[in-house]
Image 1: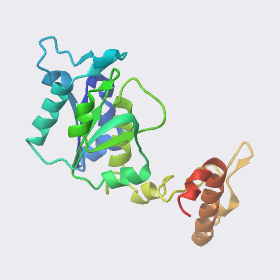
Image 2: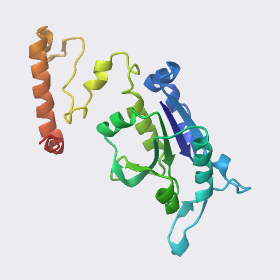
Image 3: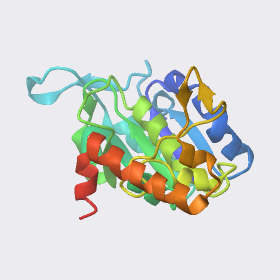
Image 4: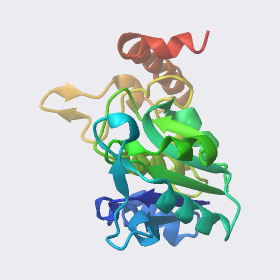
Length: 227
């Protein structure tokens, strides 16, 4: 799959996508991630992207023209399944959405900055609006990076052990069970005996029980979605 990220400050994303699982997924040809500087598309000779808001509202607003020109240039080269704008008032990003988006072929993620973007872009060019949570960041770059990471890591072959991704928290609306590694006894802090038993059926039962218990205690809201 291909992810194109549009931003006013590409330096914020420099190097992020070249490391770890994201880097390996691209090396394997499973994913392409491209970051586009919106200033390369502005017609302003000073490479300016923003202007004052009509109506006297506070804050600077990203203009239509650079965003429209960038999206149009990309669409002229290929079809995009989604053009996503990351914004605090969007749909909550979660694991099911990451799974869904991983099945797409090409997506665009537009990062807002300053006070936001001209609303006409949202009305005419955006197919989906996504939020990382009920808080406001300086820009959408961190959100785009988180989304790309969550999407790419569930692509078949991105992780060496694909079962690892399937057992992550939220895959089945449950939090993951506790995990441990060697040594089995560290300063008297012992690994649960069941995990050392070799009885996979009992271990699977323990894992499910732990997941349900942790979800009830830490995220009871997730259990309501299973009802």
